[in-house]
Image 1 (cartoon, rainbow, N blue to C red):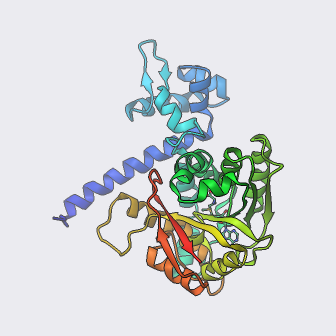
Image 2: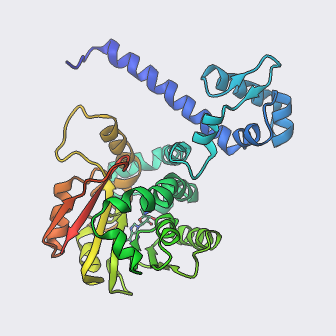
Image 3: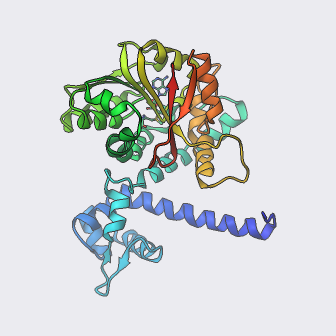
Amino acid sequence: MTEHSAGALSERMVGQVLEVAEAASVWLGGRLGWYASLHGDGPATAEELAARTGSGARYAREWLEQQAVAGILVRRDDERYELPAGHAEALLDVDSPACTAPLVRQLVAAVLQLPVLAEAYRTGEGVPWQAFGEEMSRAQGDANRPMLRHVLPRVWVPQIPGLPARLAAGARVADIGCGHGWSAIGLAAAYPEIEVDGFDLDAAALEAARENAAEAGVAGRVRFHRADAAELTGGPYDVLMLIECLHDMPYPAEVLSAVRRAAKPDAITLVVDEAADPVLTAPGDEIQRLLYGFSLLVCLPDSLSHPHSAGVGTVMRPGTLASFASSAGYAGVESLDVSDTGIWRIYRLVA
Ligand SMILES: C[S@@+](CC[C@H](N)C(=O)[O-])C[C@H]1O[C@@H](n2cnc3c(N)ncnc32)[C@H](O)[C@@H]1O
């Protein structure tokens, strides 16, 4: 039974302040290069850390003590502070699915815009993705990198009927709303016969995507285009995917119409989006709470920054997707039984 006492909420808010303050300390450690130094150069005293990273020793001492008190760093007998290997992975290893530090960076980028968001809430207008700054875009790329570069090709694709064979045969793939390109790159690296076109509106993300593709050695088969998903060109494609982006788009039914037009009749079209409950359940579990958190701060305001937007927000329920797909001329939407999708669900659009 839910307790609605002042005391319970009061205690909960103190807990929230504690979590936010510690998340902010994680952000500082990342931004100042302190975690990277403790990992790369080894344990340090405050003076050593400050000297290595060109920062203030008194601040470094306070932060090191706070990190040890919070259980993130370990204080050793020689008074040096150590970053345990597991914590280094969660904080610094950009290719590990355990690396959730970019979510902290996204949250901070969003919270910095709270006054702007409050004004938008008053007027009903939006706050565009660009208003959150390049750090939001970079953090978005880093947040999804491990899942899209590694888990998508190795774990998800083999569980999707017909997809491995299609890719192995040398498919033309469209990655719509590709962001920093990790899904395109991950698939191209795993399937040497495919060619991928990535589409997005975010110029900075596309530039990074091109660099990422070159570094990964797949630039010859992966091209990135600045284009609105509602005006997709370059088809027909064998495989089309929209990963964590349809709910951000102001005109999702129009986008799906464009996707359908760009697809071969027997194409495999996948939408990977947040695992929103089919109906509003309140109180909700941690996933639903997280989705609403990002919806309030980022996705809904971004979507509402376009005239006559559908205003979907992060919590795109299966029924909402089905109605967009139906308006776009699809016969239906299947929710696929794929494991290890984290906070996402994978849908297949049925032509
Ligand atoms: C949450 S990000 C996801 C990016 C990438 N798929 C990933 O999972 O990392 C949503 C992306 O959709 C892009 N986007 C939003 N509206 C778009 C549109 N109308 N056409 C193309 N891309 C769009 C944004 O620029 C952004 O890169």
